[in-house]
Length: 298
Image (tube, rainbow, N blue to C red):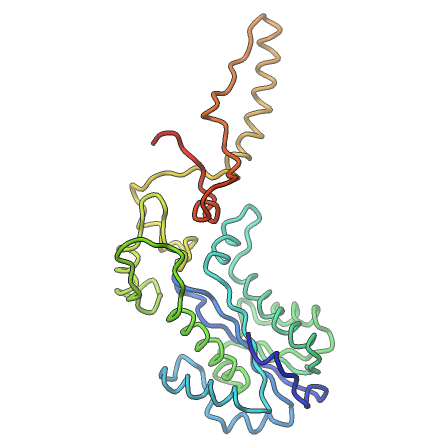
């Protein structure tokens, strides 16, 4: 998503880019990385366009500025919208990827995308995630020809990052407003507030939409620690991947044990068919996406 459909005539001239995110902390909705890029010669003009840290602007002003930058022929923009299910899956998978790493990869993905389109990026300004110096070194090693400036509160210091902040924030707000729920539970509503864990409306929405077995709707980042308190006393679910790991260990122990018993004239017990895990083929998409296994009893 962005202005990729048209390559500007200034693409081959030295360009600057700003990168910022929206929605890093909320328990609801996607995290969005946004970038804004333009010719270096347009740098001074950016400071006159009223761009500022999106958190300091009212929604109406953000929308107005977003529409104006989209119409500006000297500005390009792009976003990376990271689905809440993708965030949680990466953070909970066997080889876990933390939020900082996800953020870094998203930012670098935007740089690569714009470069692959043919834009000559020479300077990139980034709002830091984690240690600023380490992040800058990581970016420089990935893209040696580019000068990177990584700083805290970059969205308040550099207009090009302020513009990126607006792009990311407006995109996330619209994604939440137009979220398409895959779930069909009764009494679902959109009064979820800001999505931040401390928001009373968000807390109420989570409480109302939790299910003791199926968890939360796909809007929720179920890997967030905030979610744990809502499932005290809920149904325990065994995950296939975890069970497979356990089986590898237990199988090796069982083989050794059965070998010893057979030498003494005993035979080992076979596993009951109901204990053998299902492959998951043919299941409803809801169960497949959440990696839930079939149970014969509770």
